[in-house]
Image (cartoon, rainbow, N blue to C red; front, side, top):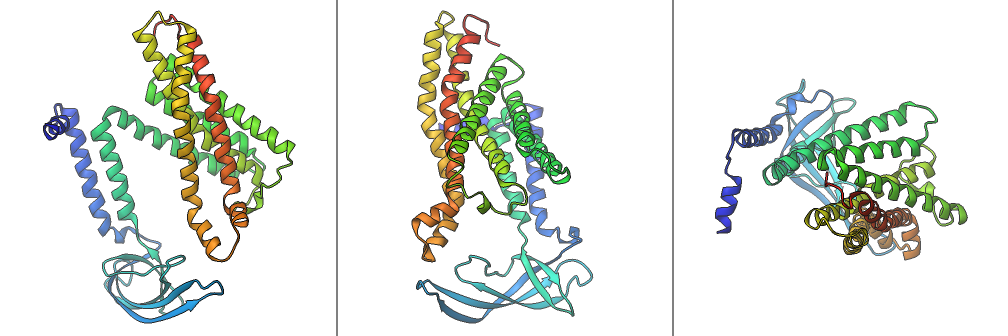
Length: 374
């Protein structure tokens, strides 16, 4: 029964759906062809590993009794592009078994190579465009097949938002003394507007959701600023932020705003959508009951959303934190170096989610009571 329902759902019942499946198939063919796109690379030499032979293996132990193995491979590589297309070269690859900084290579893998002085060839890294294209194709295919029009709107939203973020970064790099918080907050507002417009349409529901999202985000950021000012930012080691070439505090606040915006928008959307459905099903519902219904939805989802943010943060810092601990650092030092800034950003987002519950519930209850659902 379930199998038949799935078949009926996926069976194309219009020219538009048939065209969608054709596009998905063509995209799959394109993914397959990325395996043979080496001639398209002009700035890098691409080669494929034909054989990989282990030449030596040496055990190493550090002062904390961490054991690793330094291994040397000899790779026979066939060059796939450039002036040396078709030639075969031997390249040594030195790596550690732990794989912290480098990796072993296997026959069949394609690599980016560098032509050094003399005739020497060195390895830059693995060519992974096929893997990236495959993951993108799977994501797009699932969105289009399972969600159809909403899935297409999601893809369009992602493309527009990535473009906006790219333009903001270019502007930040090319304009001297630009206000980073204002720039990325403005971009965040535009991204929220685009996302909600494509997901909900241009209607009252979208306007209320956008207003609740922005109000909650701004208030959360104001609270964070007040607390950091009162505590003189003690315990926040901004200089430990990776690869920062600008003032770190504004970058941190911009990161916090963008991180909070998505989760707050999710909470606001769920709350307000539920209130609109209640109003549509029960037009006589009072503002108080509508507000309480929104609070109930918010209470049920804010814990899960905050936990998701925390788990994402933990997954980002887990590997580096483990490395610090394995090298004899204390828990306190490891948390201070790797986790404190992320924890603060997660806390700011959590404050925003909590604020979104009464703000979204109140705005929706006020504006949709006894009015036609947009």
